[in-house]
Amino acid sequence: MATAVSEKPIFTGEGLTFEKVWLMFQEIGEKQEETARQMKETDRKMKETDRRIGELSNRFGELAEHLVAPGIADRFNELGHNFDGISSGGYEIRDENKKTIAQVDILLENGDCIMAVEVKSRPRVQDIEHHIKRLEILRNHRNKKNDKRKIYGAIAGAVYGDIEKQEAIKAGFYVLEQSGDTMKMDIPGDFTPREW
Image (cartoon, rainbow, N blue to C red; front, side):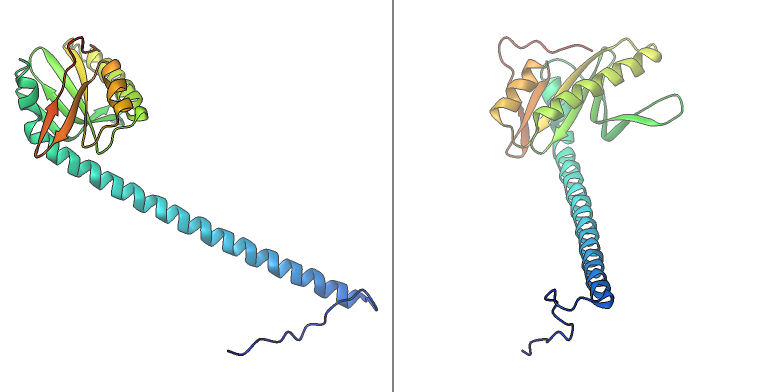
């Protein structure tokens, strides 16, 4: 491979002229422009990577919802809830202008109560905090419709960490965890579900 030879003069400080100084400033400007172009390209690539990761995360969420939805009513019906309505795939809560203000992954309903279930492949503490806010929005929305049914929450996950599981229980959520081809629900003896 041939080595490129620069035909530009090397400046030693001797015999500086206006033309030599002007040429140095031009070279510095060209290098700054190239650096700026490279930084812009790096930023574009990072945004594209973030977008793809987001899409992948959404697909994992959709897959998890499809795995959870079919048997989730059975788990709660075993506790005596007798849910007769299920909305999966994203129940949207809209304001008076029809703008979506929150979304619930799975919503189970009967004449007495509503169960809002958030589905995550691996629940995090932030997901628990977000679900609390989501249930507050749902409660306000239902109050405006004069729907006074009790609202409960649950978080379903494929893989739980010990801290996340304890935080979800502490927040008053039912915890559903993947177990083979079904969901299991371990309810501690002192557990009291929170009502919204």
